[in-house]
Image 1 (cartoon, helix red, strand yellow):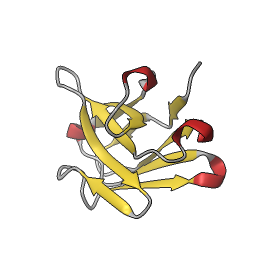
Image 2 (cartoon, one colour; image 1 turned 90 degrees about the vertical axis):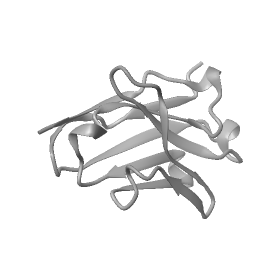
Image 3 (cartoon, one colour; image 1 turned 90 degrees about the horizontal axis):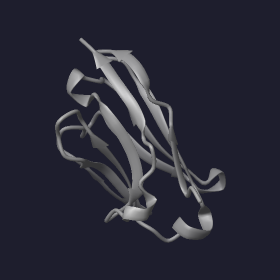
Image 4 (tube, helix red, strand yellow; image 1 turned 180 degrees about the vertical axis):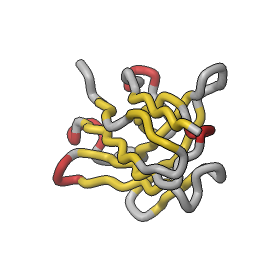
Length: 114
């Protein structure tokens, strides 16, 4: 059973924007810290942002460019990504924080061209 579904990735030029979506099962994640992660080619997966109610964390590399939000009524978490850079190229995943192995999905690929 798939509990988290990411979407919204694509190809964008440097300086462009994308909004990623993560549809989640409310019954499972309603009280969880939720996060966005990414894995660039040849690199380890890293935490990009996480949110629990008003407590929000961003990795330094995305601070002031990315915004994490959760729309409870839609059971959806978003990652608004602005001023994208080539180094943001990666597959983006959503999961709990800390991540649970059973919840890793296929992710959504983001490619930023220079």
